[in-house]
Structures are given as structure tokens and as C-alpha cells.
Length: 266
Image 1 (tube, rainbow, N blue to C red):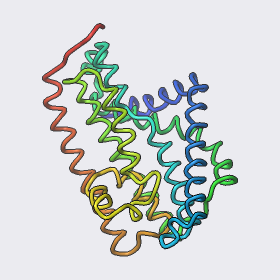
Image 2 (image 1 turned 45 degrees about the vertical axis):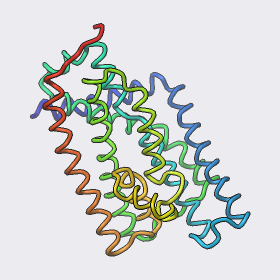
Image 3 (image 1 turned 60 degrees about the vertical axis):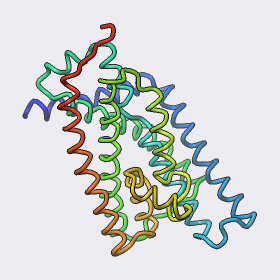
Image 4 (image 1 turned 90 degrees about the vertical axis):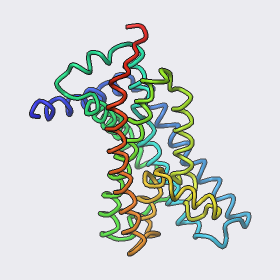
């Protein structure tokens, strides 16, 4: 156990160093995320000026929502799906399995490393977002603290889903298509481009039963004060349920996956 406490932070640090080594790629990804935030803001502003959405939330609230949701999307842009696929197809997984730290723990640490590397490039960009985007402090001190809790739960849910999808490489080998579908489906259903409360009834109901809304919509809605009291407690409860369910599913899939190790190359 003590070895894990040393190894797992080292994995996170190593992942950050890789991002810094290929900083041009990281900067391009960051610029792309900022462009997405500004474009979504521009679309919503134009829509409200044309009269669309006038009976919904105030434009200022929507812009704050999509700006913060865009930052969430940036934080969750990288996942371990491609990492797991690479370890399986190249045969490096065999070395991972004999290490003292479990492969699942290594993979989770890699996801934390991805997030940490994004934060390294996100923090310098925040002043740009604050100056050109729409942001304000959270709805209150309590809302800010609960937002951080909800954001943590949402990130863990994203991590678990990414690990689960990554483990399908044991059966499918290549995950590029699945990765793209997950990225765009999760962004949309998480409420990255619009609050789920503005979705049509059937689509809002569908998004409400999927885990993606726990990754972006719930924490951002808490931040702007859209979820309060009973609705807030219910939303946190849904996040906790998804966290427990996905954790159990991850271990169940892993027990089957280690029995089916197919190595390509290596």
C-alpha cells in the first residue's frame, strides 16, 4: 500500500511532464477550447438578440453557464481510453499486470495526470476567459463549496466511464470510433452547450437518466444557483449513486477483462 502512495502521484507527475514536453499540442488544444467557449457564447448571444430563448433563463445566466461548462469540457477533454488501447495493442499491458500497483489504479492515476496537465495550461487562460467571457462568483459561499464537491464527483464519474470504455479494448482492440462517439455524445448530454433545463422534455428526461449530466450540468447548475435545496440534494445523491454503480461495474468488467488478454505487436 505504501508503494502505491509513492507510485500513483509519480504517475500523475509523469503525465504532466509529457504534456509539457509536447506543449505545442497542449496549447493548440487549449486554444481550441477557448475558441469553442467564445463561439458558443456568440451563438447564444445572437439567439437571444433574435428573440429566441427570451422566455427562458436570462442571457447573462446562460452565458455564465456555457462559459463554465466549456471550461469543464476542457478539463474532461482528455481520457484514458486511448491510453488503455495503446497498452493493450502494443503488449505493454503485460508489464503493467506484474507491477505492484494494480493496472486499474495506474489507469485512474493516468486520468488524474491528464486533468492535472490540462490545469497547467488552463490556469493561464482563465484571465482571458474572465475578460472576454461571461463569469461571476458562485451564487454563494455554500454554493461554491458544494460546487467543488459536485465537480469532484463529476470528474470521478468521467474517470470511471473512461476506464470502462478503455477496458473494452480487451475485446474490440481498436477504440477510436468508440472514443469519438463518447466524446461528442457525453459533451452534448452533459449539457456543455446548453443547460439541460432548456432541453425539450423527452431529451431532458433522457439526459437525466444518463450519467453524463453528473459530469457538467449538475456542478455548473449548482454554481449558478439553478439547483438549490431539495433539487440540489437529489442531484448530489444521483452523482453518488452513479459513482458507486460505476465503481462496482468497473471491478466486474476488470475481472472478466484480465482473463482475455490479446496482444497485438509488442
